[in-house]
Image (cartoon, rainbow, N blue to C red):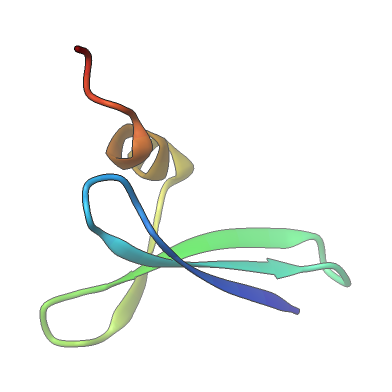
Length: 53
């Protein structure tokens, strides 16, 4: 199991989790109540995009 905390470009704290055994990959972010929830990769990519100049 790989667990990698990351701060996205927009400041969102996320955790990338990857299980090599079951080949599952997931991005998690903390909700306001502190519970970690899964977010889609499209959301991660949108939050990581650089702003146009």
